[in-house]
Length: 351
Length: 111
Image 1 (cartoon, rainbow over the protein chains, first blue to last red):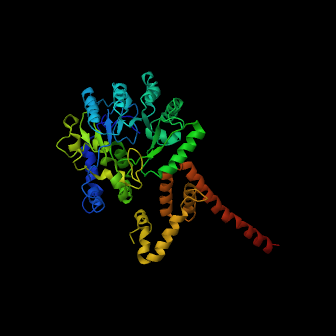
Image 2 (cartoon, rainbow over the protein chains, first blue to last red; image 1 turned 135 degrees about the vertical axis):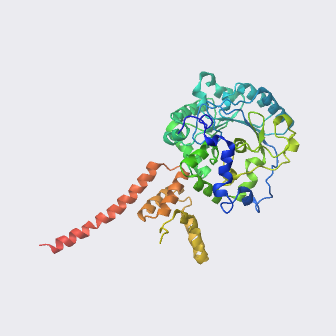
Image 3 (cartoon, chains in turn yellow, brown; image 1 turned 180 degrees about the horizontal axis):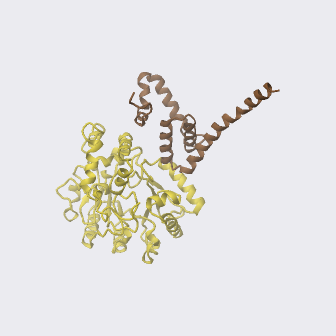
């Protein structure tokens, strides 16, 4: 596994255009596998359209202390993109003007944003029902300035969602980097210590499972039972829910699929597992994703492919929320990842 | 014939066996799916049994399918390899236990 982002390696796949070529051509050329937009026809009114704006997902920046092999963001320590204070304020304005129920902060490691705490505190006062921080866990141990984050999360009633691809060291470290598993375990213990994931508190700690390779996630409930049993027995760790998320053929995971000659079979398996009942529950139907520079997307995956919202207003500076809902959702073949099997979203399976 | 007897793509066509006998095919797949549901044995345990049997009957399709099934279920490689050794032990043992027959015939016929 490389310890650098595609961007810093000047890898061809750091270009969104190069990624979209893989998703539009090759096995998806005419006569090959059906395009997502074609497959959806007959199951749903097309093109897909959002039905509401319930979730605002902000990507605060691409800087991260980890360089995970499956990262669709191509995040890493070398990525300097960060949301400006002006854009953060625009996001708060959007929350004030709408009935957004969930604010979902992601990155990179969102905690590395210089105004992270200030922003979370301001957002928490706006009546958001579910204020999510997607934490990679190791950031809590990366520097002494982050050590008190569990207490901070608690005071703001933050809902912590953390990646932990497996409950054992080997698979976790292969995906997320050497030493990540034991640091993640320590971070989970610290979150438990302030009450996160405990049945007697309302402090929610959910884990995210990504398959460590070219295969789809198994049944979410079964894996949750396995994780709970193993983490409790081996480390006395508690958490609330496990979300299984399908890896998307984007960025570094796409690099892995191509380099390991798994790309075609993986895409075939996504297409074969297409589940029409997941269609009206996919996250793009009620989510808006905002990039560090203020541009808006149907989801974080479209953000990474730079498929901006299909609307005349594409930047948060110009947004009129009730008008923005009147748009078509941009799709490409990565969208099969959200409709495969039990479906996949940032909150796990949807069916 | 240039086409190999076994092709990985054929695994995806397994369901096509119903085309020439829909009723029997439907019965088979209904039974098959029921077998692998959670029961007195967990679906996870059944997946490992299937992997071991796949090695015993040396079915490349089944080995492919149940290795991937195990990956999805979070079954680890040491667990899969132990299952394969169970298959190998039974298969090897099945040969060896016939050695008793060999010994009896040998002793009976020998002076």
